[in-house]
Amino acid sequence: QAFDSKRLQMAGDPLPVAEQVAALPAPYLGSLFSASENGVLCYHEPAARMAQLAWYDRSGKRLALLGEPGGYTNPALSPDEKRLAVDRCDPQTNRRDIWVFDLARGTSTRLTFDPAEDVNSVWSPDGSRIAFSSERKGYRDIYQKPASGAGGDELVLESKANKSLEDWSRDGRYMIFTAPQPATGVDVWVLPVSPGAERKLAPLLQDPAAQDQAQISPDGRWIAYRSTESGRPEVYVQAFPPSGGKWQVSTAGGTEPRWRGDGKELFYVAGTKLMAVEVKASGSSFEAGAPKALFEARLVPDLRRNRFVVTADGKRFLVRTEAGDTSSPITVVVNWPAALKR
Image (tube, rainbow, N blue to C red; front, side):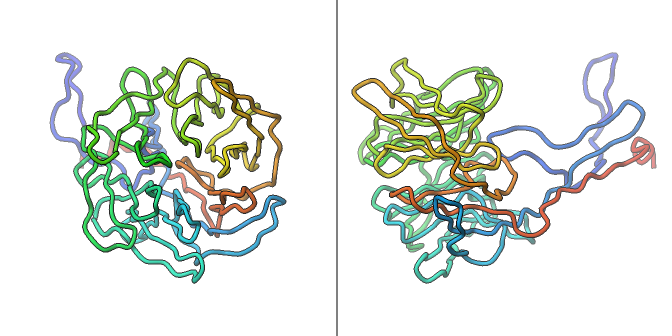
């Protein structure tokens, strides 16, 4: 779009220069392009991220595959570990919906059908409902739906912010989500969802650094999350709700924390390795042991909420591994301003 340098304002109508430009997933902001001063433009096209869902044990031995390769993101294991909810991208529309796998049979059924993106599913503590984020009103709002697929989608929270759902506490009282904030970057928020409770938002983690990928411990007393406050992503733990104490769990970078079912171990990703660290909580104090690498994981290299889930006993991991060509082409356009004069 033309810019009037005398009036310091935009002029005329915007004209397309490039289409199908890749963008970072919410809650991150930005598209992957760059323009030079001499008329050269380069941009990433969206990658066809084909993933294979695969089960591994703690040693990295592959136990089984789940389903065919596809555009899967953000898997979520049901409380009884018999089902898996996962985003699945339609290659024709490049939009994601929630699908549910029956893990015993290996079959899958589609749960959401809205043309907008439906992503980031989390299970209710009793496994009867699935909550998710959807862009059907222009922003990522929070919805829920019976996990059986019977019944409509219920709007849980609507606001003019992109809300990426992270977790649902085991006692069913709270949902937590991330949302970008102009002053503090990406923050974590808590929403009461108990029957009869006032759905009044409250900030949970606020800091100039980005904070996301938050997970509430099984006993509901702690929250693990990723933060960039040190200059690189690391995994931290605070009390839930925060009371001032904060403990760094990872030691050489870390993302995507997940709790073991008894809360005595945390798992996370460091580079391409799946890590484990024993943790101990007593009263208001928290202690983390030395992180140990479990195995090298061929993870799909993208910025998502999570690329793996772990069973409650900490012995098996369902991982989003790379499948096929996941390269993202870079297109270079020379003298792009000339196209605007046609």
